Length: 618
Image (cartoon, rainbow, N blue to C red; front, side, top):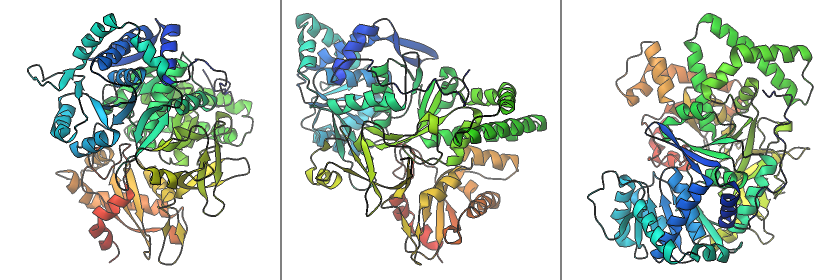
């Protein structure tokens, strides 16, 4: 059992653990070295099914040969339209092994977006998860003259469906086995022909402004970065990881699939996005990476459960978390934890805190990783008080994931840490914009040389669009997006993300967008947490008929007003929120207002709800 004052289990790993200068070369080396070991597990019909490296290699070989039998040529693009599943990984590695370019498409994308992404990437083969995703492909295929084949993973409901352009994954693998028998050396030749400088993957930005842009990453950049990850977030072949974020997003592609490919850590796939809380308790990951929304949801669940606990249990929790917070305070200051406090903390863990960790599913976690959006420093401190280090990383699609990372030995809540040793990070002397330079920086945007020139200057510095500050120890802190800083009508510069993070720390708030640019005062649009606010309404006998009516009840309005009043007390007068409006529509990942990582799109929200915003200023 590890403790916060002993972090020897989180030491940077700088020695290479796997050879290979391209992703397919690395993968096939791993198959040869780790053959019978389990790499991936996925729950199907209530049972966990394991995939060894050998089984994975066999499946990838058959799919790659199937692609080549269909005429898939080196440097052609294949796209994957699917949720996060083992088949996503198999298709990705098969495409790369066949010398192609792999592109991911969000399963929540509409047919029009699927058309744009396939057209822009010049996709010739499209993998789709099931009938729902196939329907999107069929709706737009007439506008995609380069698209030759659509491969369907799950044929449920499609047994009697026949279309010359559509083939099942099973049939593709059968075709691959025939091709393998006829050309046994072809795949090895394809893998050997892939060079480090070749384009490997496309990762499209979420497109909050304009159409999505395809960020190009080379094999060299991917391999270089994934080796570097081990120096900031050490992982071993004994680790259990959870794979549930979208694989078309750089975070899960790099931090999940490719990092585990490199280290040999086991990848456990959740059943579906809705079963994450249940699956994490089953998997009990030893290393757990998630976005702030997930960490906030876990915290909310504990707070709600606590309200239903007995007075004795509530008192025990208050004492235990208080002890944990005192330990965390010493650790954050770099001070030794007194012996008496260590003993009390061991008792606090035994009686209370370990049960809280089991409730979440993090009782085996060596450390937690958060990224992709700002997180409340108070939330980082809370997980620390439970006895689990939470390390914040920062990066973007264009930097191949993490560019900075908080070291376990020097955690600073609110900071994104110093530059990772594999790249340079500095601030623009004039604007304070964070700039990144290194081999991990992307090759540019597909088909958009002018956008690439805007992003990367003549000296090779990537302009990230994030504004930050850096302290004397080299730790960076993001203050906001360059385009998001609010300048009030009175000329005051305000950082909305700090206020929004404070509001999101409440279990009743899922997201918040602060408004106030060129306005006399600040207002906020809030998306409530449906589950927790419904529970509040039921506990307090508040009548409501649907989601919209719930947001309009006087009691819920008062609940949110109380949260805003508490938040306002922590900020200067000019930063205080005067009015709020609750989103009365229940949003999901399919709605245009949300990014794939479930964040509200600031500009779109301001445009779509302009009428409601204006009403708050009258």
